[in-house]
Image (cartoon, rainbow, N blue to C red; front, side):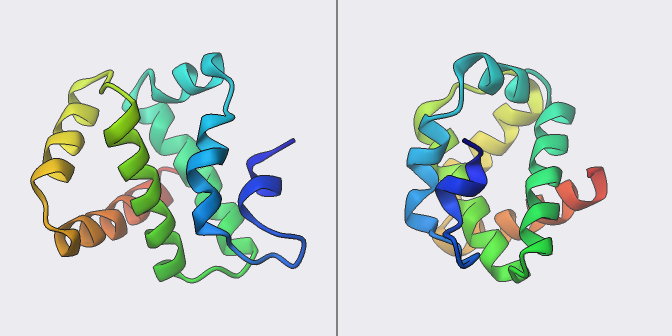
Length: 114
């Protein structure tokens, strides 16, 4: 079962409240593969953003989802490289408004990588 089935309902509506549980269900080996390098993380995120855009989600909806993912990663995963460490530190010191802006920036970064 893909993340699509977990986070997007049958009518293609985003269920942001299901992001954490969907991330928890990613196979640990797959999660390690995604997070092993910043390039693989950007690529993975870029592919998910492309899917979200095809489903018609707005940049704002995608950024809100990116915030949920960043919160999950900050709470549950140790950074595996210097880029992730920097993002983690910025995330932790940022206000909610700054985190939201950073989420938008990460979406644009991943769009370029995708």
